[in-house]
Structures are given as structure tokens and as C-alpha cells.
Amino acid sequence: MKKTALVTGGTRGIGGGISRALHEAGYLTAANYHLGAANAEKFSDETGIPVFSWDVSDYESCKRGMAEVCEKLGGSADILVNNAGITRDAMLHRMEPADWRAVISTNLDSVFNMCRLAIPAMREKKFGRIINISSVNGLKGQVGQSNYSAAKSGILGFTKSLALESASKGITVNAVAPGYVSTDMTGAIREDVMESIKNSIPAGRLGRVEEIADLVLFLAGDKSSFITGSVFSINGGQYL
Ligand code: NDP
Image (tube, rainbow, N blue to C red; front, side):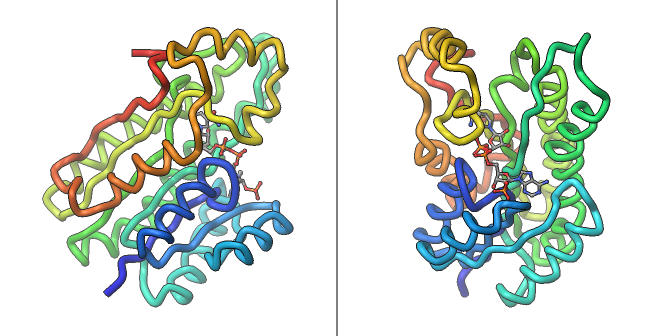
């Protein structure tokens, strides 16, 4: 029987690449998104991957979305990729409480929400793969990103704790910490700032969505069964 996979924020950028890779590898894949309906419909038409809208920062919304996905896939997700994320950059002395809250709830509460809903069925099946998308800036910090870095760093502690709780149940829980990758999120960065970021990457370029997706695909597969609680840097040597 085909394994099932669910990718949050899975209709564009890194998540879009991950959904495609899982689908092409033969997983029954579903992709979540939030407000980008037109893009999601286009993505679904192009790939054949069913798409579902809900807000990952809201537990009840996740519950409803997960139920829809379960019905469509004919069962709960064997593989969960927590990828959805946002930035609301500002120096802390100018950061609005709403920007702190939005980033923490979308990037970190979401991981609790989705894992809390997915883990009981994984424990019952004695199989699961959870892959949480963190960031190089969760490892090293970044000016203007105290909210984002806190959320992405929080994901690492969460990942390790859930890995310890789940290892005896055939469930692995890992984090992937990408460096800068060319997507809409990085497209919003000012050109001169982006130039200096590029200069700080020993590989001399941004990462590609496909490179992140290939790593996630490996972690989703059977060959990674002894890897859990790990954090994978994939950043062209930017931070070691
Ligand atoms: P994009 O901005 O390109 O895409 C973000 C995705 O998340 C979209 O599908 C969006 O849905 C979805 N999303 C946002 N908020 C919500 C929400 N409340 N509920 C459900 N879905 C939501 O991001 P990237 O592809 O660049 O980034 C993907 C992940 O990788 C993020 O977690 C990011 O922090 C992380 N990352 C990115 C890096 C980069 O350089 N790009 C580097 C390191 C980490 P919709 O289309 O509906 O808006």
C-alpha cells in the first residue's frame, strides 16, 4: 500500500518542491496552504496533488484540515512535513507585538498543532516520519529576526523531545535547517542585502528548492529509519 504524506505550506516555494518530490516518489501526497488559493489551484492542476486550505497557526483549523486530508488520502498521514512559515522582520526595538505573535504562532505553534494531531495515529501504526523545517537563522540568529530565529530555534528543541518520545514507536522526528533558498520569501529581501548574503555563502549561490526536497525525501524514506532527533544543515557552508 502506498504511504501517505502531508506537507504544510506545500503549494509553493520549498514546500511546493517537497510535495512534488514526494508525489513523484510514489507517496499519496496532500499539500496544505493558507490564503494563496489561485496559486494552489494552479499547482494542483499542474501536479495532480490535492490541496487543502487551513491556517496552521490555529489548532481547530488544523483539526478540520487534517480530517479532510484523512478522508481524501484514505487514512492519516504517514509522513508529515511541517514547512509552512512566514517572516515579519524588524529590529526588536521596533517590533510590534503582533509581528512577534504572528511569527511564533505560524512557525512554532503550527508544529505543535500538526504533530499533536498526527502523532496518535503514527503511534498506533508504529510508523511515522516527521520532518520539521527550521532555518540557518534558528541556529545562528539574525539581525531583525528575533521572532523568526526564536521560532526556528524552538523547533529544534521540540524535534529532539518528540524524537525521544517516539523512537520506540517506529517514528522518526528530524529537523532540516536550510540556508537561503530562492523563493518568494527571499524574493522579498532588498537587493543590496541579498547581495551581501550571497557573499557570505561559501558555495557562492542560494540553495535550490530541489536540493532541500531531496534531503526531505531521504528522511521520509525507509533508509533513514535509524536517524532521529537530528538537525540537518543545508546551507552551502554559510554556517557550520
Ligand atoms: P514561501 O513564502 O515561498 O511559502 C510559504 C508557504 O507557507 C506558502 O505555501 C504559504 O501558503 C504557507 N503558509 C504561510 N502561512 C500559513 C498558514 N498560517 N497556514 C498554512 N500555510 C501557511 O516560503 P519558503 O518556501 O521560502 O519557506 C518555506 C519554509 O522554509 C518556511 O518555514 C521558511 O521559514 C523555511 N526556510 C526558508 C528559507 C528560504 O531561504 N526561503 C531558508 C530557511 C528556512 P499561501 O501560499 O497560502 O500563502
